[in-house]
Length: 168
Image (cartoon, rainbow, N blue to C red; front, side, top):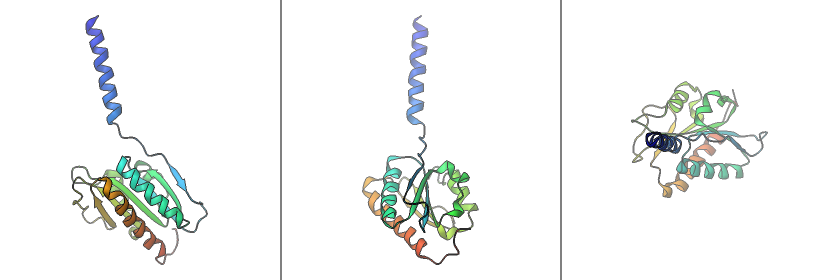
């Protein structure tokens, strides 16, 4: 009886630890009018830092009368990114590499001048090799949220102002 109680307790503790460590999916959200002249897609992973940066970017771009859609990075492969005027990809550096979904997207997306890539890395000094897109790295520190969100927003605005042939 005692062994069964200990086994049950161990299972509960392991289950709670697994749930606490599991990566939470980002809920798809939209801001602005989908009929707006400029459409921005943000694909991100979930973390307190990334969510703060993305929230600040969305708030700023709404003021520019843009339509902004935020999705989980894992959903990027299913989203028609070519229908957007700018794409922001937010991912994490693990083992000195971008996440698989971000790497695959950057490699395969033809309109690289429409992409801004943010990779969070421990010290913020790692940079993806030859991504071919406008890439930024940063440590996930709360004092970097506002300046980083402003930098990304400015890059997106520059993309939106650039002459374009429109969505492909």
